Length: 195
Image 1 (tube, rainbow, N blue to C red):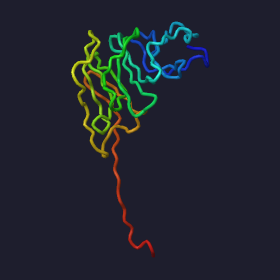
Image 2 (image 1 turned 180 degrees about the vertical axis):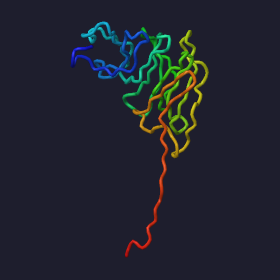
Image 3 (image 1 turned 30 degrees about the vertical axis):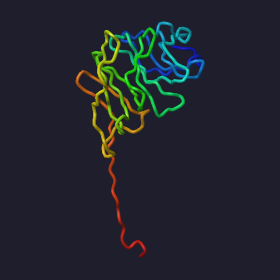
Image 4 (image 1 turned 135 degrees about the vertical axis):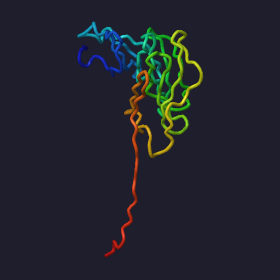
């Protein structure tokens, strides 16, 4: 596909027709950006990689094509404060970012609804990790209304997997699959331990 050692890219999605690989690639400023790689240009595809978007202060991850392939969702992590991240959408051809989340909490793992009319993501807004969504107008390319909460994990007994790097979402027409962990503990008291 590429010449070994010539391209640093983490693939995250395929175009619907299989002609493009979407992912995070590293820019000259050593920040990760959104890139597409044409499969047809193998074995030297790195010569034809296209940087869709990047910004010097931001690392961009979790890229996904919208169902109509016109837009790409991603999360942007501030390189100076990795505790805050925001979900954005950009035209697949490049251009200005459209914010899906406000960046005041951590937003990650954006996934499109199958019809492209919502973007789902994991966020710690409200204190606990939960899946949230925001409606999206695919024609206008803009979010519609405020974010809405999808799951309601609010304690340590049952929660989304706490390691953000390991959380993945799968969205189908009538299901949402998320990794959930259940914690339990017991206290044991031992009598006569001094005998």
